[in-house]
Image 1 (tube, each protein chain N blue to C red):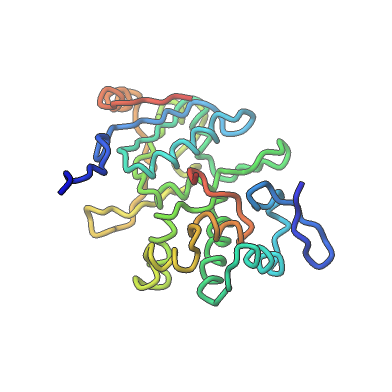
Image 2: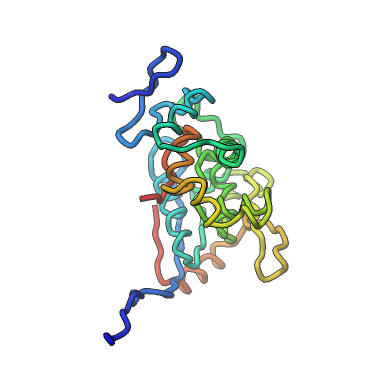
Amino acid sequence: MAAYEVNGKSIEHDEEGYLEDIGEWSLDLAKIIAKEENLEMTDEHWDVINYLREYYDEYQIAPAVRVLVKAIKKKFGPEKGNNKYLYELFPYGPAKQACKIAGLPKPTGCV
Amino acid sequence: MSEEIQTEYETEGVEKKFMFLNRKAPYGTIYALEMLETVLISAAFDQDVTLVFMDDGVYQLKKGCDTKAVNMKNFSATYKALGDYDISRLFVEKESMDARGLTIDDLVEVIFEDEDDDWAEKPAVHVKSRDEIARLMEEQDVIISA
């Protein structure tokens, strides 16, 4: 089983890089995953990551992109609540890539 | 010049009426969770979706489920997200509720924003009689039961 190395600790992930145990997530781990995804994390990235984690905490699922876009629009305004903005932040898909960094499972229905 | 390339599939814009009929308790088997995942996926395709809960299926919407002892993921909270997926009809059968001593106050709240009413927030869970549900079944194109 492949693993991330965080502060001397091994944290297992599946073949696509999603955590085996979502309880193992930490900010340091998120930074390591982001680095492997070749992403330069900014405050705007973290806003999305934090939102995803809050959503998962409340509903026990990662939201579909459509739901995420709608929610970001509500929270941060229309200039951020659109597909283009989110894909610029996470070029491999706001759901797929951002969920990985947020330590969440791959969203349901995401191929 | 070549002819215009056709990029649209013939199924584009086809909307069917889907009913997902939930009849089993949420935990102990995988049926309820599999159905919920199917519902979430179908919502991505802009279909007309109705969920019905009858028999022990009414327990799927019961508040305060604790799954620690059965070692299953607690997905009860996920039903509350269905409003975000524009699912606005979750019907529970009155006869099944009565037989189990449940009222609508025992169930989780699911809120959706009504597009046709200036996005007003409205409850999506409603109690319907067996007769009303039977009539709704008649109107469906597809019924998936588990």
